[in-house]
Length: 313
Image (cartoon, rainbow, N blue to C red):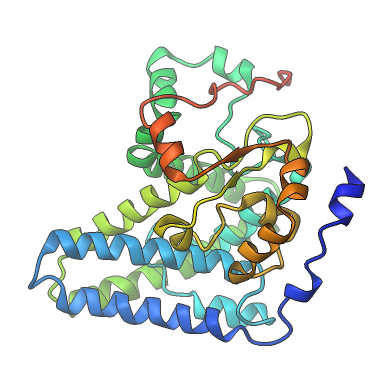
């Protein structure tokens, strides 16, 4: 495994200064969002909601770039740039911390230590009520993940943060509270901006929820249960609109092995090392999102209880 990874050398693709293309895309996403709020309601509220959903999803993808050090090398500048929470529901600081914890690849899919895992400890699963099992099974289909997933994820996310805030580690609790307070300030600013436009608040909220649903298409099968941590991470060789909306994070094994490489360099890195990447991730591969949707829209890809997980006492 180590030999195959050494054949993949992204150093020439690593940014050395300001990434102007990423910066322009961030500013353009804000400009288009403002334009949608101001001009689209007179055309169609349905179109307004759809455009807000797409732009908020793009903003989330750009937030992911920011927490990995783009477009600036300075963390404070990146966080200031992404301050407005267009998706409304997830604080940037909490997204940053949980996502970076998720990048400890040896913990991927761990029901306890991977903050982005959808697997449950089999022992916990056995103790669940029938209705909760039904909901989680429904959430394990792509349709369920897109429609119910944002709500279930938000409840789980906030419950975890509540326990952190109430926990014994007061430094972590203060950091969680700080991130949520900053987020609420950002939400208040987004709401105020929206109130200056013809867009009703319900359309803003619906667009934000739909944006999280769009992002669930990307995260639905990013990781699988596998004995080898690199074999847990997918490649979806899509080149269509969803790949661009997700800023090529569909080439997910590339991102996990080289998180410092910016979005626009991922396709080239993958093309030049395709066979190596597919060997590293044990062939966990789909041709495009059409294949994913066709297979899993109404069908579960994985069981809810982790199939390789020994129950913890």
